[in-house]
Image (cartoon, rainbow, N blue to C red; front, side, top):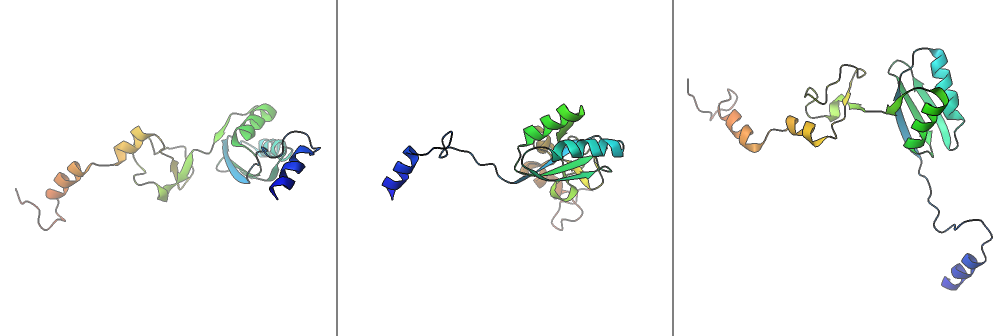
Amino acid sequence: MGVLDHMSGIFDCSRGSSRHRKYRQLQTVEVKIRLDCEGCERKVKRSLEGMKGVSQVLVDRKSNKVTVVGYVEPARVLARIAHRTGKKAELWPYVPYDTVAHPYTAGVYDKKAPAGYVRSNQDPQVSQFARASSFEVRYTTAFSDENPTACAVM
């Protein structure tokens, strides 16, 4: 079977090398974009529906979110929106409120986020504020009212 594969590779009439072709995966791209009216919504939706590889476009005007499902790359979706509509777009920066350990820390909480969402904290500086070291935890729990073996210095 190895010889047949080799021979079919030699006599392949298709253009380019099919062995090294990179297949795109089906993925969901979420984009944050300012949508003011139905016209903006329609303009964005039509520009993305005409894109090659897109199978579904969902627009949520209330939360300023566009979801694109298909065989597309996120960078190309952003470039298409910017080119066709002239609007500033960015990848969806928010995660659900329940997935973050400390949602009210300085770099995570965002007033402009839709209800139930906070900013994702990929930055190590921001996530460091949310975590207390074992040294800090040990000393703060030593004087806690909930700790029955706590020191009673009062």
